[in-house]
Length: 464
Image (cartoon, rainbow, N blue to C red; front, side):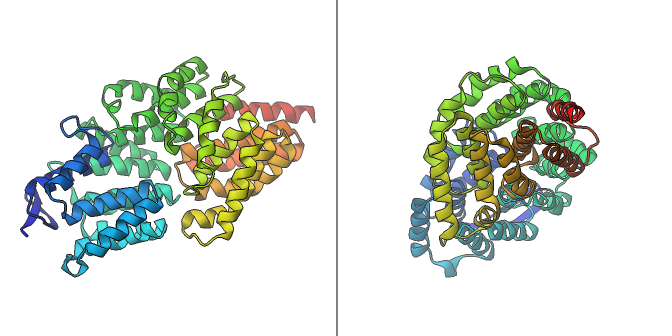
């Protein structure tokens, strides 16, 4: 086989590919570009079609097959994906792999075992060795989000950004990733600088737009968040199953501003349509928005009924406590105690079983408490729900899958239950939790919705 050595305008990638097809390498690059930028290139037909064309060019292309199996194990985490990986490894001559390929194979074996922390650390290590390798860079980075290790989302791009110069491909991409990492760590000036570089370099970088939305949201500035999203909408609406998530950010910002009709209009036009497919990511966006509206005293017109039915199909997956928590509070919203009981039963079996990984650790520590708290909320036993949620939510929001913006729904639920409980002890606990969240975000002001809840707490204090 021929070996192709890629180059970045004079700077060596230091990655060689064993393939007879230069076209396969080009399509590999195109697939990674779309994955990293979160956009759909109509010339290549999106990530899925690009990957199919890549392996059609060379079915034995090792790098392409490693990317395929990485995506399958990471996204689906299914027995069928494991079986396909087993079949691939059985026919692969691992002695013929170069160092870069061997390292990637080791990372995928961690995914196979549900060891997402191990995979994250391995991809971070590969990225340090091969700073122009978008495969390891992207998956190590995203696994920081999935594992709740969001410091990796700053540290991985920070470790390679110095290798990228303004004239080089992906200069903006690395800054867009770094923007999000800085925002999650409360480093807002650095986040703004990196986000501006990313969008100046490539306006179609949907992740960079998304990172800027997080920056404004974490800073409690929904007005600027809406303005930025409207100014960039012609670009990020080209996303593949990601524009829906940016719409979620926009609807959330409208909710913060008290513009409830605008939020529900976005829900009906975009979030519900994506949620109907039944995938957990769009389901979580849709459920989260409706719960925030309910907590803010708004009627949702029964929209959560469809979501609860779709969530019930995922009550035995246990790939992320973040998603299980969304399933639980959606069932609680509609009073579906049967689904909640089944979720609890299955979760107890999962905790007692032999599966491993970060989600197993977090679920074992806090999962049952979280779901039991949601069940108590659905039963309108707000005092018991608050006691249960106070035990776990402060830990859950720092350990599970997701960004601060996504996980804030669990804090809102805790505060909501404390308000409905109404005891002085619970009100003070909710107040302290809000102060702790401000310190975590490194801000001195609450977002408008939380400020409205704070004011309700003060009103109840005055009655005691």
